[in-house]
Structures are given as C-alpha cells and as structure tokens.
Image 1 (tube, one colour):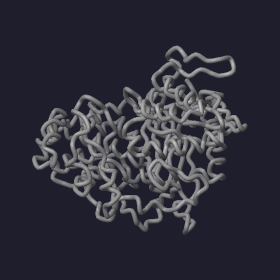
Image 2: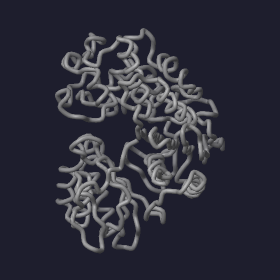
Image 3: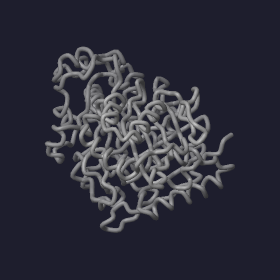
Image 4: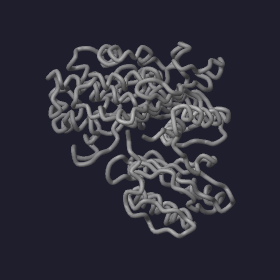
Length: 455
C-alpha cells in the first residue's frame, strides 16, 4: 500500500500559529502555492504554475484559464492560512486552510509519483469536522461504525454515489452501497454493481505481461518492433522496450487529446481502434530518461498481448485473470449497456479536470469510448476486486510482478472514480467505487485508510 511518509524530513519553517509542511519537494510546492496565492500578485502565480505544474497538466488547462480561476478564488477567499496538515507524501498532500472571509477549506494536491514530483491537480472543497484529524479505530467493529457515519454523510449530501468495502484478510468487515446506478430509472447501487474502474485496469495489463514473460513469450527487454513491426513510429518501435512501457518511461504520450475529442467514440471498440489516436506522434522524450503517465503506452502493451497470444486482449484477461481470480462480474461493457448491474457515470465536468460547482450532474456517456481498453475503462465490482487481491497472494501473477507487496491504485475521469488500497502485511483492503467525479472515491479511501486499526 502506498505509504504516507509525511514528516520524514525537517519541516518547512513555520510560526506558532501555523503547522509545518514537510521539507520534501511536494511540501515545498504546497508552501510555494500558498505564498503565491496569498501575494495577490498574478505574475507570481503565473511563475508558480510555470515552475511547479507538470507539462501535461499545463496542456490540459491553459495558463489563462488557471489565472482566471485564481482571480476568482482570490477575490472570494482573500487568502489561505494553513490550519492543519492531514497528509503529506511525495505524491499527494491534504491540508485544511482558513480563508480571510472565515471559511474553512480542504485542499488536496496530487503530484507526480516520481521525481521531480510536479503538481498535477489541486482539489478544493469545504472542510468537514473530521478533516481536522482522524484517529485510528481500536477494532474492526468501531471501524465499521466510523466508516458508515462518514460515508453516509457524503451520500446524504449527494457528494457520493457508489460502493465502499473494507476487508481484513480477505473478508469484509464493512460493505455498503449508496446512491443510484441509474439516476433516471432510480436503480439503486448494490454491492454487486459494476463500476467503471478507469486506470485501475492497468493493473490487469501488468499482470498479463508478467504472466506471458514467465511463459517465455515476452522479454522485458524486447522492443515494440519485436512484436509490432508495422508500428507507425519507427523510432519508438526500435527504442521502446516492454519494461519502459510498463514503467511509463517510454516517451509515448496519451491517446486523449484533439484526435480523441474529434473521433466518433462509438467506433473506438478494440485495442487497434486506439492506436491511430497517438501511435504516429513523436516521442515526448528519449525512452528511459524520464517518467510520464502514459495511457498510450498501455494501449501498446494491449496490442503486444494480442500479437503474442493470437487472441484479443479482452479474451485473454477474462480467461487468465478474471476466471482464475473468480472475478465473475468483471468485463469491458459497451458504454450504452442496458444491464441494470452496470452503473451509469454522472459528471459535473465540462472538460477534463474542470468541475463546475452547483451544475447539475449529467451522464458521461458522450465522453467515453464505446469500450475500454488495456489502459482502462473496464468494469468490476467490489467483491471482484477483493478476490483479485486474494488471487495475487495465491499465484495469479508471477513473482516478477511487484504488486505482491500491496499497492494503492486509483482511476478516474468524468463520472468515474475508483480506488483500491491493499496491504497484505497489515491485512486490510479498502475499495471505493463511484459513478461520480473524482476525487470522491480517493478522498473516501484516504479517510478510511486513516481509520484502520493499528497493530
């Protein structure tokens, strides 16, 4: 499970009236953001964005849009005063701030998982009393009670719709469904409702590659060209290895962008349908020199799996991962599925990363491809994901798969958010699946993880 290694370094200097942020790269970025915001100087805010925000995020949300939002926020809040640090790690931070106009806000910063840990997103919400601090529960019974109280408040406020499960040693100690799988038809979510997982599906692709490597059908040092000789970018085909695709150090970018936006989403139904959206584009950097999140790289891995196995990606995963793991409710459903067990996604977003508070939720169907891929977009249930973690402990993946030691993974897009935290050493698994916008599932997972009894 991802460890929140907060405060492992000397803290950033602070006054008696303000708590300390850790002197990590991420902690310093949060401190710099607060100073730039409070300055009221738009040029300093621009400089902060240029120096601290990842290039991918800057492309998704242009500078002028960021500065426009800054002006609006500054005119409303006035300033942010750090009140409490809830969590601070290399890849994320959660803080509570007081505003000059008397509000108390929860701020959530997401950073790149590897150096230089540049900023990806900033989430802003009204702070709740529990954001002042979370105390681990003494036992599983009190954990279940605290989880129910916390999630029920979010569901009653219509901030959450989905399923929550906390398990110990493979058995649920708390599980409950909230909200509707289909708001128009008033179909309630159940424990067995199938939710879009977003990028959590990448874990299945990783297992598949490791399975095939264990059989000698793939080597991690193989290049793309070894399997896909007609790959459109000859430089990528020659240079990029399977390991670099897995590690997201390939230099291959994303399939989301102008081509995806312009494409007929109903025609994106197979792995091969995704390749024209990105495969001919130049590498963003030389393979192995940097790490950048790459949906495109995981599409290429899906194409390699198909070439090596002689079957389609979806069939391979069904037969070699879902079936042995007893994941009976998992699959890649078409976006207009009429099955009542498949949750419809609802969003307030009008473009990636931009949420309009107060706007009515609407279906996310128009934004989705017809079917998900090896990069994400498949569906699963909370019981299936629990079975997945159990199967990983009993031989589903070879020892080369580093997920055996646990993981914290998430996926999200418009109307889709899922989080899976698994710690085989501590014994707990936290699963949150939602058909609402990010970061609600991740926020709940973080909170529940803090409630887990400590040995």
